[in-house]
Image (tube, rainbow, N blue to C red):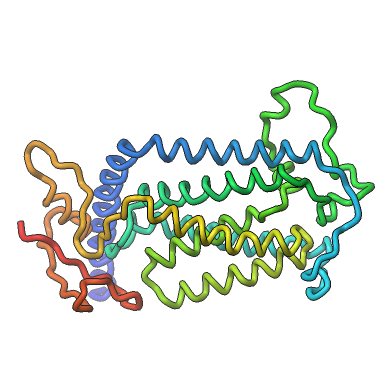
Length: 313
């Protein structure tokens, strides 16, 4: 009975701290969203425009002989019945990154702001997708995917009856598109995600695994015949270069692990109080002082807890 009572008290106390942490983080992120909603909305609108462009090029696609491809010669074909494998790997990578960007709401140790990290990610995606649209409209290649072969009813789209039909994006059209080849959209998302985690993530092992997943995904995309090898190769160097240069133009995001808070200064001067809430996950506990693990003040990538330096109140 004593152990059960102790465990019950511990669970209730930790649940209370977690709830306060979520509330404090939500307040902070809402304030950031109010300041940056135009960038988020603009990025989402550009995702829609990219989808429209990919659907639009499908109208120009004409099935033809599959082009000679080195990757097709070297990698065994997965076949239609196993084409889902590459999509499964991509979905895993996408969902993992998405959940990671929201970890500040749950974990006490945090390095990023969710709103700000998505502003950067959307900026990278938009820049890459703009280049992608220009590229696949410049030369429309015959698609190597099974539904793009001659004789498939999905290889070409019938002439649209009205303008509204061209503005509608359906999930089936996203999965069974043809013509939007150079360069791979899946690789854009995956490389942007892994480069973002490479810079702002804290676990070295996860970073290594993330790069491995992207390499495996590259091979699976070719093996499933969703893209030519050139589509994947061009994505590797284009996305990395775009992220490198765009990242230099963007303002650096504050590192929360060294005590940088982006909280609005209220008239009654409660900024430090809110900062304490974010660090401790509660409103009443004293702020613990944590020593930095390195002399240069950087967070240790392999530590379970990021070392936080908080200004004296």
